Length: 58
Image 1 (cartoon, one colour):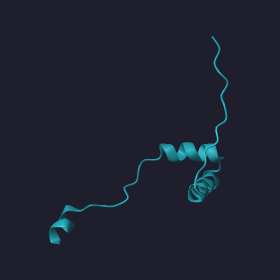
Image 2 (cartoon, rainbow, N blue to C red; image 1 turned 90 degrees about the vertical axis):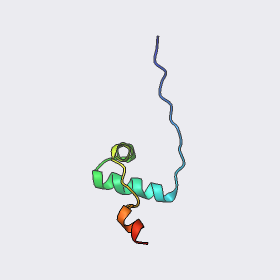
Image 3 (cartoon, one colour; image 1 turned 90 degrees about the horizontal axis):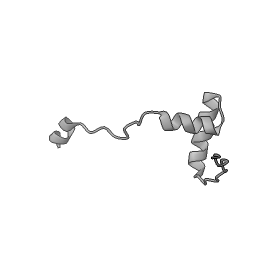
């Protein structure tokens, strides 16, 4: 049984996403593949903080 050869795939991304990948690759000293792997493994950062105390003050 043989393993099929990997194929190339083209994925279109926004200019903003391209800039993030380029900056990440540059600061990490890697290529886009390394930047993608790094960003996929990075923990999620919350976008907004919800304080129960601040909701009660309103």
